[in-house]
Image (cartoon, rainbow, N blue to C red):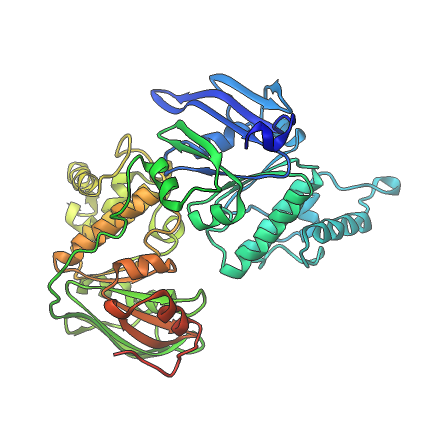
Amino acid sequence: MNQSETGDAAPVLALRDVHKSFGAVRALQDVSLELYAGEAHALAGENGAGKSTVIKTLAGVHRPDSGQVLLDGVPVVFHGPADARDAGIAVIYQEPTLFPDLSVAENIFMGRQPRGSFGRIDRKAVHDTTASLMRRLGVDLDPARLARGLSIADQQIVEIAKALSFDARVLIMDEPTAALTGSETARLFGVVENLRADGAAVLFISHRLEEIFELCRRVTTLRDGRWISSEPLDGLTEDDLVRRMVGRDLDDLYPKQATTVGETALSVRRLTREGVFRDISFDVRRGEIVALAGLVGAGRSEVARAVFGVDRADAGEVRVNGTALRPGSPTAAMDAGLALVPEDRRQQGLVMDLSIERNIGLTGLGALGSAGLVRRALERGRAADWAVRLQLKYNRLSDTVGVLSGGNQQKVVLAKWLATEPAVLVVDEPTRGIDVGTKAEVHRLLSSLAAEGLAVLMISSDLPEVLGMADRVLVMHEGRLVAEIPRDRATEESVMAAATGRNGKERAA
């Protein structure tokens, strides 16, 4: 935003020529950013571009090595997060951290409850103030409800209400929609619009470019820790923004290779889990990528878990290369050549406190040693080989996997399973939460694996990804498989029509 748009108003919060290093790693180099009252401003960049360091600098977690943080145009020094909070700066993270056994109101006012006579907590004031905050946000959420069982979307609303109770003037939202459904995202955007209309400055971070264009007026782009641009979004295209983020065109975001389709590798027949999905039948052949599409809650991930044996199906049969799998046994699935990359890589795909090399080796401990002892040289050699093949970006293989960016964590999960040399790879949301550059790398990997004869079953909520990568699209609606659409006939309209049940009685040839 230029001066003609803001008059003489100073930005509420700004970074000016900030540098920050961690040892030999230069996290930020000459980064500037300005946030104005009543404006939603996007921060864009690949994983590792420096976005998290910017957030933590604004929030008082890190202090710049050089450069300034300015509040209302005046240089300030935050000695910790409490200083930033007292200055009216709040951060809403992707995964809220609430006390599950306390109510919504108690979570908002934890440690600073208003007191009545004799020093007792004024519970009515806590309840009424929380109700007022919810009305301000335009959300119907009972202040007395326990936090346990709240959806991620409602937990984020509680965190936003907590920020408002501190009179926050700047709201920093870090990937807030990553785990939300479409309707939940729309509600969150409505809340953000209310905050912006009330004069709050909002910094919005998301890998979903369409959300940036929908919600924000300006965008600041980082690349490799450096400031690239700050500019209005009006007049920019998604391709323009991608080019600034990665320094190159991404015409090959979906590099689908032509392959020779072979024999059936995965066969699923009449798979049923009562109350979840029913009568699911499909095949995946060597050399093809089959996408399992549908709306959130359609049962796609649950089918994948039952195919792999994590959840036991009530009926049906799964065969890998013609061999029937023992129901409810992931071990039998692995032995038969089946691999599953789960949707939640942090909770289900990785052991965050273990090293990169140990995580990659977890699926093949038997081949890396004997008598219960792992030979470190073999483990490290295997990890190093896959790190090169997947272009993993890391410092040391002995570092914990938690220090990696989201995209590199996803590569570690893929390496762990590809090291088993599977016949069938099931990948659930393979590019969720990772930047566009790494998405292209993951897509290229999946395409090359299929070209080498691997059978790939891909579950994705990203419709362009489905259309760009799949040879066939299987569409689920309310627990049933309602359509099978070949690549040359798959469009956004045909897939969404099936996913929403509008052609539930049709099944494309």
